[in-house]
Every structure is written in structure tokens, then in C-alpha cells.
Image (cartoon, one colour):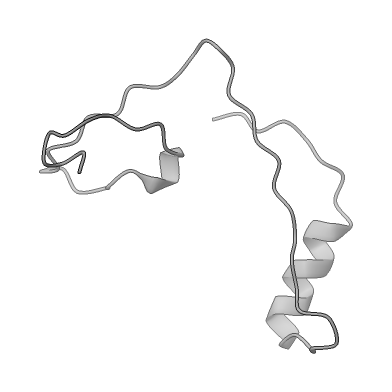
Length: 69
């Protein structure tokens, strides 16, 4: 809808298109400071693949830190 000119949206930076010919323009939000909390979710009783378990363990055991772009 945004690309069609029907409004605006606040989205994470990673959601923006990376193509140089995109009709969309990103304007960083400075004030107010935007924060969000992320969490880890996994299905109870289901084993993760080795790679997924490694990532899960690394994220679960790492202390949170502020993100700086």
C-alpha cells in the first residue's frame, strides 16, 4: 500500500527494500527513541536442529545490550 502511495508506515530498517530503484524512501526516526523487546520462542518438547540449537543457546545466554545502527 505504501508503494502505491496510500500512506506511510514505521518499519524496522531490515524491512526496507534494498533495490536502488525502489519507489520507497526511508527517513530514520530520531525522536521519540523507538525501542522494542525481542524474545525467543520454541515449541515445547521438540528438538531443534544442531544449528538452530546453537543459535538458541548463543542468544539465550548473551546479556542484552543496546543496538546501535
